[in-house]
Structures are given as structure tokens and as C-alpha cells.
Length: 230
Image 1 (spheres, one colour):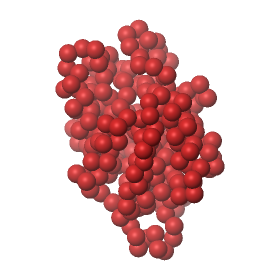
Image 2 (image 1 turned 30 degrees about the vertical axis):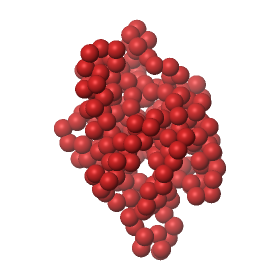
Image 3 (image 1 turned 135 degrees about the vertical axis):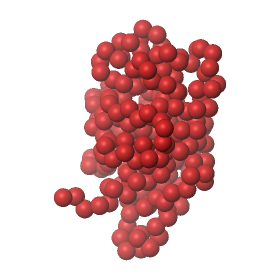
Image 4 (image 1 turned 135 degrees about the horizontal axis):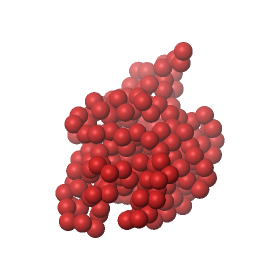
């Protein structure tokens, strides 16, 4: 696992009052590269410190890495976003589409996400021309293909990945039960565009470029958490 803290763009605000940090958790080095290079390419200002954590693949690795990170003093109160790539379950999805979870589902149950509508709006602005889907994101401990994809779709889920459910469940089980959590994934394969088919490379490049563009939306979501609630 590897994490890299990103500098905050709001030092003056932090001097007035501590700003909670944000932890962005992803499984793979290529996902971490996209997220970190996106900050340099697309800019944007985070209201507080941001750490991009590579957890390793699978729910067990995600659980261990996120728990360890949040038990540390600096990230104890962090908002948490699970991000990276996913498999779309709905017909008509394409590589490069975005998925914003309203809940994640895993063996530990369902976890409701924070600020889903705001994230959808922010991503629509940050990545114009890309379709943004919102709905349940289900977890798996292996790559899903063929008939299993259809079975998961039958549960109402719109996408599947291996780490988001474990990431958010671990975040809420570590220290702060009221912690804001979200899951934003980029579709890398879909029912008509499975990874085993020709076109995988093109789909992967498209997904990488989209993932590289999402950080401004994450910053907007993070900033909204600091506003007074009515």
C-alpha cells in the first residue's frame, strides 16, 4: 500500500479553524497514478489536506489499509472516498461512464453514501460529455463476468467492484461513525464491452482519462461538507 498526502489550497482557512482531511482510497497503482496526475493536470483547490491511498486489490486489503490509515492521528476524522475502476452492470453502459454510489453493498451490509446528488452534479461539470449513473454499487471478491453480471444486476445494483463496500464499511467502523463517505467509480468494462473482448485497451485508456478528471468534483464535495447544515 502507498499513500501520498496532497497539499491543501486553503492555508488561511485552516489557520482559522482545522479543516478535516479527505482520504481517497483506490486499489491499484494505475488508479493512484490517474488520481495524483489529475491534480497536476486539472488543478482545483481542496479545502483541506488530501491523501491518495493505494490499498491493494480485494476487500481484505482495502479493509486493512483503510483501517490502518484512519487509526493514525492525521486522518482520524477524514472524509473518505472510494474511487477507481469498476464493472458496469446495466446494458448501455460504456467504458468511461461514471458511477456514483448512493449505497455500497457487501457481506457486512449496506452503507449509505453522503452527498450523492452533489457529487453527480459536480462530476457532470468536471467531466462534461460523460454519462453519470447513480445507484447501488455492490462488492465482490473476484472479477465478475457473464451470467454472474446479470445476476448482480437482478439485485438492483448498477455496478460492481472489489473494494468500495469494504472501504466505506471500514471507514465507519474506525473511530468516527458520522464520517462522510462516498464511492465514485469509472466504468472500465460493461455488458457489451467486457474486458476479454477486443477494445479493452481503448476502454482502459478512456477510463483512465476520466478518472484523471474527477478530483475537482471531489474537492467540491469535500468543501460542501464544511458548510453549515440547515
